[in-house]
Each structure stands twice: as structure tokens, then as C-alpha cells.
Amino acid sequence: MSRTDKIFTLWCLTTFMLSPLSFWFGKWCSQAGVHPMVSFYAIILFFGAPLIWRLIVELFNA
Image (cartoon, rainbow, N blue to C red; front, side, top):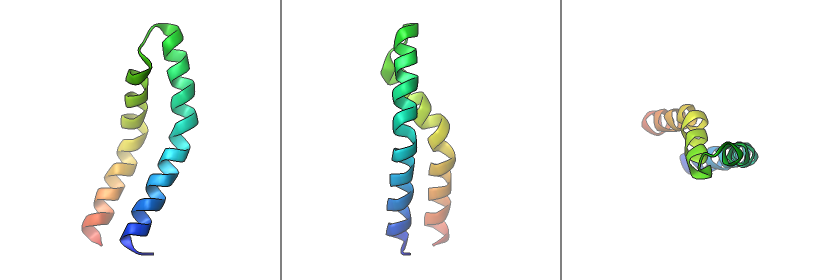
């Protein structure tokens, strides 16, 4: 696998995993009175940070 293929696969998997979770969390937050976009960014930062860090490491090691 080339570096571009790795990046694309990681991006697809991340998007696929976070979509239902962010929808559910956003729905819960809107019921609690929090703006849904705030919850969306919180999920991206919380779950995406290790993946983004791994992606950066892969880029520099490749």
C-alpha cells in the first residue's frame, strides 16, 4: 500500500466510525441544550486525535 492509500483508508474508516456516534451524541446534546456543532467538534477532537497523531507519524516515517 502506498502512503496515499493508507491515508485514504484511515480517513474513510474514521469518518465511517464517527458518523453514527456524532449523530447520537449531537442528538443527546441538543436535548440537553448544547449546540450540536459543539458536540460534533468535541467528538472529532476526542476520537480523532490519536488517529491524526498516528497519521502524522506515518507521514514522517514513510
